[in-house]
Amino acid sequence: MIKFRRLYTFITCAAAAAFVAGCAATQPQTNKTDMQRERINNLQRERIKQPEQLKIYYDVTAGKAGHHFVSQSRGNCAAGWISNYPVIIGGELPPGLKMDGHNIVGTPQQPGNWLVKLRFTSIRCQDRSYPDEDVSVYFTIQGDAPRKLK
Image 1 (cartoon, one colour):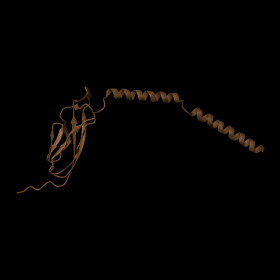
Image 2 (cartoon, helix red, strand yellow; image 1 turned 90 degrees about the horizontal axis):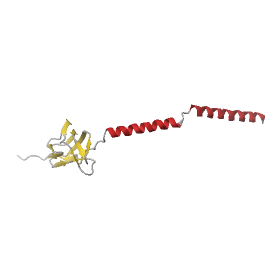
Image 3 (cartoon, one colour; image 1 turned 45 degrees about the vertical axis):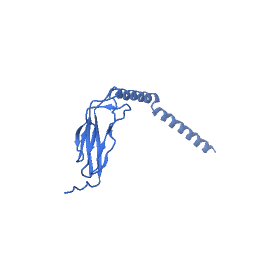
Image 4 (spheres, helix red, strand yellow; image 1 turned 135 degrees about the horizontal axis):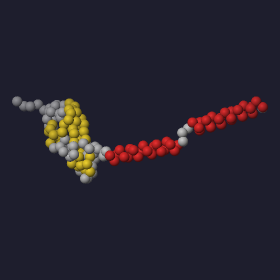
């Protein structure tokens, strides 16, 4: 019984010492919280400096060879938005399609996949300016083009 009490006392003292040492090694929560607040404030300042993008996209990107195709540009703006006409900065449109203002129209001539990158500039929505935006559009054209009669 005496050995058990000594062992119990030793284990209790060792556990208490480990707990105290662990508490001393842990950093105070206030420093971490203050650092988190400062980081959040910095992120909010960055967001104010750089307005979010309008997130422009095209509504239709799949078509069929030999069939008329229209794809309109859209943006996440409830009231409608304006910009300069987009300019192709990379890739190419499928044969038979062309830019018509902000829209992509025409009759695709051959099946395949195409990637085109467009740049929109001077973007405005509800009297707010947005930064220039590069938009990648991936086209999938299926089927065979109709044969031409001689």
